[in-house]
Every structure is written in C-alpha cells, then in structure tokens.
Length: 120
Image (cartoon, rainbow, N blue to C red; front, side):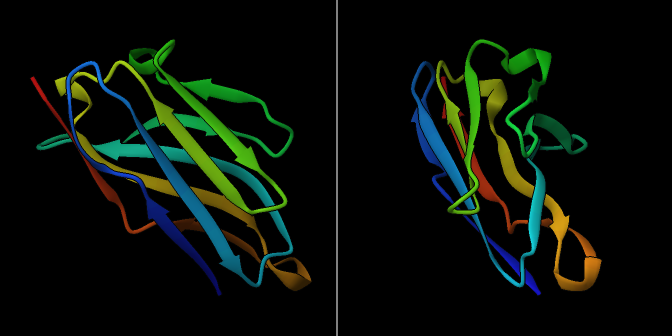
C-alpha cells in the first residue's frame, strides 16, 4: 500500500504565492512520474505540472512562468511552488504519483486533494 499526504493549500490574495507538498510513503520500490492536477468548480480535472524521475517537467500553458514543480527522490516528495496566483487558479489540487511496489506491482495513486482559493 502506498499513501500520499498533501499539504500547503489555503486562501491567498491575487498575486500571492503558495507552496504545495505531497509525500509518498509505504511499500515503494520505485517512484516514476509525480504530478499535480486540479479541478475547479464545474470543471474537469486537468494537469497542472508533471515531473519525471530524472527531472523532466511539463506544465499547463496557463501556469507556465508562474508555477514550478520540483521533487526530492530521497524524501519521496514533490512540491508545487505557485507564484502570481490568479482567481482562475482556484481549485482543489491533487497530487498523483506513479511507481512500483515490490515484485513489480505498479501503482498510480492520488492524494486526498488540497483546496487553493485565490481572492481578487
């Protein structure tokens, strides 16, 4: 079993910053891609940013230049630094982690979600 714990959401004014973190624990043999997704009110869940095990990243066009994803493989942790926040960034943010447990059993787990609210 692999568990994910997210933290760092909250309420911030437009132009402000927040930093989300997500730590994986449990029977982890290898972590592959780690990413952040979000789901705004009345919207579908969308990719925000993703980072591979070797540090390659990709971002949604709407957050490029404002958000930065990073990870620490030794700590099984991924962060999302969000600067220049806009009201349209308001959403529940979910961490997603892909990897494998012992004996090659692959997993794709989601965090519980953390609310980010940006006021205008």
